[in-house]
Length: 294
View 1 (spheres, rainbow, N blue to C red):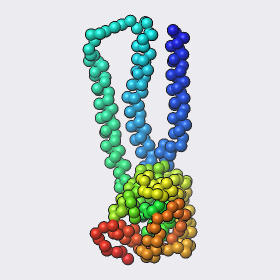
View 2 (cartoon, one colour):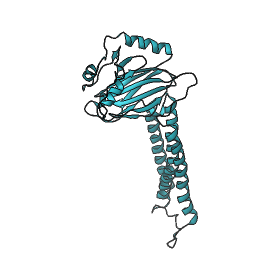
View 3 (cartoon, rainbow, N blue to C red):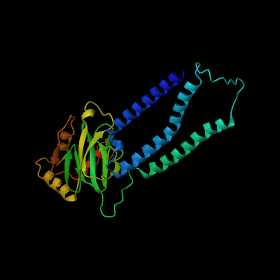
């Protein structure tokens, strides 16, 4: 009998260890757990806190399930205690209700505070740098990034310097979409006729993946873009000069509408000149205000 119990324990421990190794190995590819931005780090902290609190209930339940299954199995002849008239226990009732309630209160408080703190519209304060403004338009099935101050635009490539706050104004030229750079922070929806705001910052230079996290039709799977956080502002300025040398321009809405036609796996294209207020003209296409900005 002792040999059987030891054998079962070894099996359970082995399964637990293999499961833990599998989970940890899978986490190595989870970009959400390897953030490179201030917002992403705070969101990771919130995810791990919530996950840990939930595990404080799930793990004891699993352990007790295994324990009771072994202890009260029919073949365990040492378990001779039989209490047919047992009804309840105040101590057990208190633990069963108090622990989950306390966890829910704590988790609710943390979530409430974090939700307001991590509001996408909250500016990232920097003592030395003003935010760089980038207008984002979701097209079928590509992304157009407009730099209004620099008067350039680019398809499917997003470049900005690290350690400087970025303000994204986001809209859509088609169906509802979702703008998401997993390692830098949360996603924000892109909706036709509306402007949403998102503040992000890269804490380290590097190349990151940007995606659409909202199904938007046939070319959705290829609606990805490259994100480059440069080490210095000088590198960013060099990239701007590179874009300004392009022969492509978006001087009017006709050229824009041609670009906006559905296409899949669209290559990176630079535009050296952009019609003023193009971003807001796109928004006004889907509103009752038919005023066009020039």
